[in-house]
Length: 196
Image 1 (cartoon, rainbow, N blue to C red):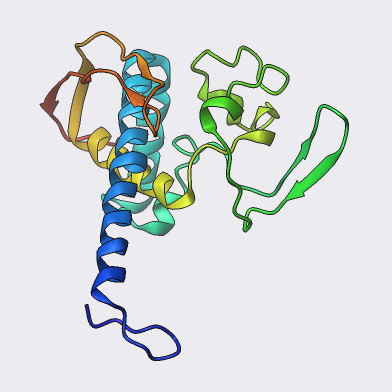
Image 2: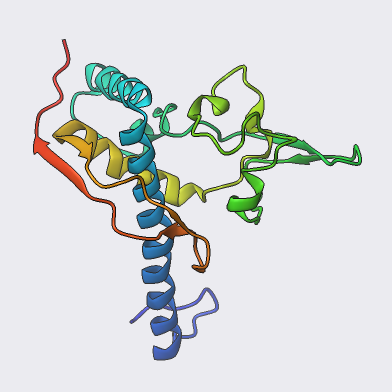
């Protein structure tokens, strides 16, 4: 409430209210929904759950139970792509995109382009792993949301055994942000992820 702009003028109550609404909306419609989809797909595809758990164990061997920004940056499996890249249009025009640039697109559309992704409707996080080259057009999540998602899932994976007990969610295409049509039910039991 007492914040000021660089030029020294005070933020108004209306501006502060707008910022709070934007922050609440962003948390609901990005980190929350991204975390739900991450969990639903991980719990549906056990082969990737094993890989993600192995990554957590390796990080715990290296850093103990500590999780901070630098350790989140090391979670390559939970975040398959973050680098400079080039995009070539269907017409052959190439654009270089710096990782520092802001790019906006529809993830529901961009991540299902059949000329970019082999089998675009299948769950395949390895398409973003080194050597696959399918990550050239991956523009889904904002950097902050990805770090929040990784922090959430790092905590959940280290402290809980999880099992998807509801049917895999259907996509709510009519929502402003593509979420799930109905609740995702997960059974959980506490655990400590041990490293040897």
